[in-house]
Image (tube, rainbow, N blue to C red):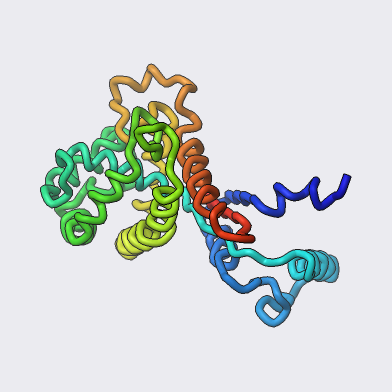
Length: 274
């Protein structure tokens, strides 16, 4: 059997997932992989300085493989774990404001942030915990969300939460090609820019609070399938929801693959930063 056939799936569909501590370089790798031009070419990525001779050899081997003419470069689409967590948060807030982000107030938003964590046990400051002092929610986050109210309403309607799952399918149960194309473009372009801008604003005030906010959401989702997990239910944790976020990422990958299947000779490449 031809090896071309054997490796055809790998060549046409590739998902790369990386994890690591904050500041470990995963985001930098993502920026390289989304480039339309091969970022590993020698004129783009020369050998780093001060490498040991063994590391230089390894670098050269990897670079030759990644730039070989037979290994045609295709850019990666980026799925950020934080963006998926934010989808769940937006969908939850959407219910809190009765389906209209124009009705969002600082009281409702601060209350939503405070519900995510146990205020009696946390030792490191969370978003909204002392908003009367630093104004992160009322002066930074709320104005940005209000200015993007129509986009947020669109996000919540497109990426619906059903139980603990993000639902993309149509009423007939199978997503159509045109809808897949629209969802894909919306998530990886419009929504991705919105999420990056929001997190950038929060990071300028307190990057640690942003990180803890995402950790609290992820923990609640894995425990209960919901952004908000009441303290009274903490003793009822089961393993049913541990893959809630992973399932959402898988569905976004399927949307991307479905949209790309209609592009001649297009190879689906996904990079996800966990």
